[in-house]
Amino acid sequence: MLSLLSVFGVSLVFAFTTVTFMTDWTGPELQVITSIANQFNSIQNEYKVKIVSVSNIAEKFLTSLAAGNPPDILHANHQYIAPLVAMGAVESIDDITKYGLNLKEYREEVLKSAEYHGHLYAVPMKLDIFGLFWNKNLFKKAGLNPNDPPLTLKELKEYAKKLTEYDSNGNIKVLGFDPGYNSKWTWSHVWPYYFGGTLINEKTGAITANSSLCIESYEWLRGLSKMYGSEKQLEKFVGGYGPYWSNSNPFVSGKVAMTFGGDWIAKIIDIYNPKMEWGFAPFPSAKGKLMAYTEIDMAVIPKGAKHMKGAKEFMAFVAKPKNLLKFLTPVPVLKKEYVEKYENAIVPYPHRNLFVKIFQKVHLFFAPTTPVWQKYDALLKDALLNILFLRTSPQVALNNVQMKMKRALEMMGR
Image (tube, rainbow, N blue to C red; front, side, top):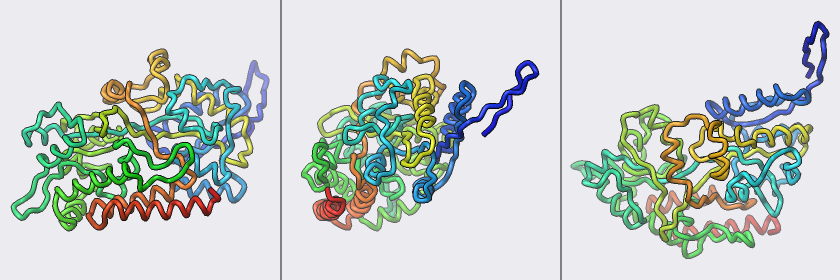
């Protein structure tokens, strides 16, 4: 690409190398990464970063990869790093510090999630923090203190029972707590961690879906469903859920009193029910440990990228604290001291102080790092839905997941 610049009447021509950044971001996130790209483009003459926003990003990336024309940078969630590495689809970026990126500025858990088998493959950009949201008005109606969320898993179940309402025919009107009855909004892999378990052996990579703590966590979830009523009652109630991003969202509309979800739920409330009184806190854990599930948006370099140097230059630029703090996230990927140092760069974000205050000292955890994540995630979702709707027992469902995942790893020679 050529750029024409006139200086004192003399025309100067610069040849730019176009670096493509493929993302599925839209809205505010797309605006932020575009503004960062525009700034990068304005301060140097070698590269021109082009942001390409697409739907069905996985399909379009794989198509471009097969055609030998992948983007120079790909936006990917952290749980897909290991599968991408296993496919041979991404490059390691162990030398990224040569381009000005300071890895010491990142939270340790965040940086660890960008690594696989001792190599760095991604630059973390923003994270979403998950926890417990509750409806304060429904707490008051049930005789509960609206400012005191449940602190233990036992308390949460007790609160859920008090908050659940039925009509004269025994149909559910308000559900005390929804652990993921809608398949599109189900984070089936988080529950073992809140019980002190894991879904893989971190040292060996072995699947641990049917470990005792995993089974215990799913038994707890099944107990909620049994408390609410029959499979038909639950299916009928969940069938009345409206679209997630709308005023018919079951939590936002008052059909669900407590829910597990990410910080974006606050955005949905602000848009569709701004008068709603709500609270947010870390989700209770079995051992009382303050912890929070997190999903991280990252940038990776695909195999076959034509402009690796330019890609690394831009990724290092994105990773500067003043740029990372532009992303609309309540809890940055940076360590506390770097957030405070560059506080003036933070973009105003509704309820940011609430999230930051709560999560400054919590331990962050992520989806398990495994090359067969997509299959594992799909099997766990199916298992959880069958458990929640009382179609099978956790032991049977998780034994099935364990068997299928063991085969999947064996087929990969692992």
